[in-house]
Every structure is written in C-alpha cells, then in structure tokens.
Image 1 (cartoon, rainbow over the protein chains, first blue to last red):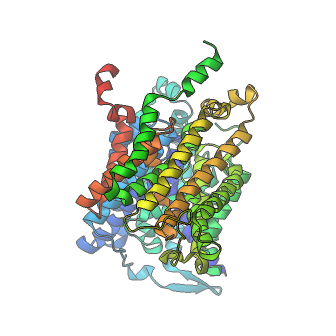
Image 2 (cartoon, rainbow over the protein chains, first blue to last red; image 1 turned 90 degrees about the vertical axis):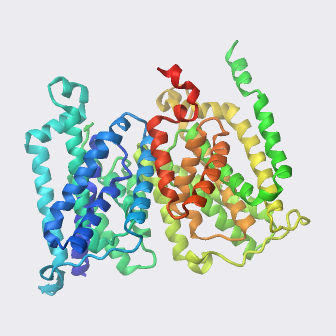
Image 3 (cartoon, rainbow over the protein chains, first blue to last red; image 1 turned 30 degrees about the horizontal axis):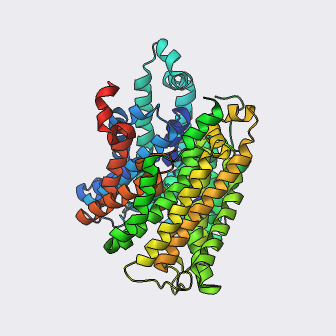
Length: 286
Length: 318
C-alpha cells in the first residue's frame, strides 16, 4: 500500500519534471505546444544512445540529455515557434501535431521502432525496506532529484531577476520591452530551459515509462492533463496535479488493471467540469 | 438591400455548387474501378463535414471527434450483429446513439478556454477508447469485432467486392447530409452560430441563447460523425479499436484544415486531397508517411493555408 503510494509519488514527480516546461510555455506564453513530448524523447534517446554506443555513465548522461533537449528547443524556438506565438490556437495545435508526427517518424527511421532499455548502474537498482515499506532505490533517486529541481525552479521564478523579468514579459510583453527587457531572449531562454527539463525528465523516465518512437503521442495527454488540471499560473499547481495523476495512475493500474487509464481520464474530465481553469488558480491572476 | 435580402442572396444556390453535387453523383458512374477508394473518401468527407459544423461554424476546437465516429461504428456493427442486419435501420440507430452522446457530452464543452475544451474532447475520446478496450467481450478489443454480416441494402442490393453498392450507399448519405447541412448553416440557426463563433459575449448580448445553440450543433455534429462511423462499419463489415484512436481525430482535423473551415465543402475537398496525398506518399514510403504529413502540416501553418493553396495571391499580398 505505502509502496504503491511511494511509486505513485515518484511517477508524479517524474511527470512534473516532464510537464513543467509545458506549464511555462502554455501558461505563461499562452502557446498550446503538443510537441512537448518530442523534447522529452530527445532527452531519453540521448541517454540511451550515449550509454549504449559511447559508454558514458548513466549519471553523466543526465546533464547531457538536458543540454541536448535544451539546444533542440532553442533552435526550434528561434526558427519555427516564434512566428506561431500570435496565431490562433487551432494553428498552434496543428503545427505542433505536425512536429510530433515528424519526430515520431524520424526517430523510427533513424533508430528503429523497438523499445529502448536503460541499464541502470548497480547502486541505483534494487530496493530496500524502510519500516516495512519497500522502496526502489531508483524511485527514491527520482523523488529526491525532482524535489530539488522543483525547489530550485520555484526560487528562480520568485526570487531572481530573471524570474521577475519572465513574469513581466508574460504579463505585458510590450511594456516589458519598453522597460528594456529583451522579451525575445527571455522567451527563448524559458523555452530552452523548459525543453531541457523535458529532456531530463525523458532521460530519467526512460526506465520507468518506457521509451519508443511513439513516446510523444503516448504521453502527450498526460502532460496536458498535468497542465490543464494544475492550472497554469503557478508551478505548485502543476506539481500537485502531477502528484495526483501519478498516484491515481499507479493505484488505478494496480487495483483495476483492465480499466487502465480510464480512471485518470474520468478524473480529469470531472475536475475540468468542476474547475474549468484548473484546480489551483489564484483569483485575479491574469 | 436589407438584411433579409442579403442573407437570402448569400444562401442562393451557386452554379459551382450545383456542378459539385452533379459531379459527386456522376462519380459513381465514371469511377467504377475505384469505388473502394471513393468510398473511403466519401466517408472521410462526411466525418470532416460534421467537424466543420462545430469547428468552422461554432468555433469549438475539438481533438476528440473520433469519439462520435467510433461510437457510431460500434453501434452499427453491434446492432447488425445482435439485433437486425438491415443497414438503414442500423444507420438510424447509430446516428441516434452518437447524437445522444453528443447531447450528453455537450455540457462539457460549454465552459472554459480553448485548452479546457481541447482536453475535455480528447478526454472523452480516450475514455471511450479505454471502455472499448475494457469490454472486449462485446467490442472484440484490439482484434476488432468480427462476424458482422450486413443484410442487402433496401432488401434488394447485395454488397459486392468492388464496393459499388457501398459507394452508392455512402454517396447518397453524403449528398443528403451536405444538402441538409447547407440548409442548416444558411438558416437563422446557422447564422446565429457564426455570430457566437465570432463573439460569444455580443451574441448573448443581442439575445441569443449561446449554450442552447452550442448544445444543438454539437448534438447534430455528433450524429453526423456517428453516421460516418456507421457507414464505415457497415461497408467494411468490421469495427476495431482503431475507430476511436487519436489519429482519427487528428486526421479529420487535418482534412478540414486542408480543405478550409467554415464554408461546408472544405471537408469534401480536404478529404479528396488528403486521401490522394496519403495514397501517393504511402505508395512511395509506406512506413514513414506520417513524417511527410507532419511536414506538410508545419509548412501549411507556417506559410498560411490561403497563401499555400492560392499561389496567385502572393504578389497581391505584398
């Protein structure tokens, strides 16, 4: 029971790291980016390929996965995404679905459609008992790492100059640029960091979630659930939503395996019916 | 010219529309060898027309339109298997079921932003997919529902292997639906839909009951999408989980965007272009055709649909 809860928390934390970049682009920049999972896939494949072909140790591949995904994000933001910011939502949806299709087919072509396996280092595999609760070491590693990332992100957003610039640029890009903030660069950096985090999440999650070319399509709806249920004005909202989703999913799969994701989708519809703007919305924010 | 005359002028049958209807009807006689492909195109066009009603006219972005398509397909297949093999009764039953689903789920799309609607429509389709997967003793799960035998059409026309009967059947339904929808969108109801698409607040300020109209159009669109699904199940004698899959919702959106939204025939032109494009690319590179579809989408949006499909406007736009 508690083991399940712990697995759910680990899963939720993972989803949060994967989706937080989307919460920023979608919530702050108001851009519906269905291709977010593609950046996570970049990170996942970076880890797998670096370990398999170049023999880089697992821990060292994580920052590389972050950097690669961030670079891909920055490149795409510069070239393709920027003209889309002002377009209607339908155009954004189509554009990003197109990107997903391309990413899926391209990975299939280059690497192949089989499931990729991550070989975890010895000190991260296995599990131990703590007060009768079985805890997987790798799950614990994920929880700790993601918790640190969350605290770091919250501090950056609320305490640093960059964070206040970002919030200013989002609230009113025109006034922000009038005050000498380089709005384009702020958005570029934000997008790159968000994609990088997705890449890191993909690398961490390759072992838990599985990794094959359809990854962006399979998990697209999960990311969107996290963001739309959590609301987009804070990062604690998506965090709680991700934890809720992770726990609900693990429990649902354990107690009613045939119903699968049914529980999760129904929960989402009910929550969105009740609070269309998401669970955790500050009154009067935007 | 007052408003009534302007609306009447707008609703008048144009020459090209009559030609289009005639060409569709004639296609059955001139394309006997391609009836199977033509049948698929007509099905897709029907599906896209129903999406156009809610997207192009009422402005609801949906990523889960396959829900109605799939429910229609399963309803028709199950009805034929367990109740009555007559296709027309089955079609009516499937339309009723999917319209009912539209009525029930329309409550979900009235509130919230574009993102909420996107998520809820996607969620409904996913829930149905999971349900169909769960109750595989009825739906056949991933293997599909087999053993559906349809009775002859109108009691006299047997289904043939070339799909001639199937295409005639689908074509008649498509033409009827196009005709009815044409009446619908030029009626006061249709015009009020366009008003609330452009500005909901103003539409309600002049006394339109926005929610009732959205519920109505969502129900109608659900019924038409269900008809498309039912036709698929009846003409192929088969229904599988694939009818509820996400790619169907994405494909139909793509079809509609290729053809253009908000003038009713976009779905038709889009379906023709999409199927031909699909066949062309799939023949050339069967496994990776989604890459080219994706590239096409990206270019389409970046360049702009109007500019891409009407090259003669390039110079004027400068």
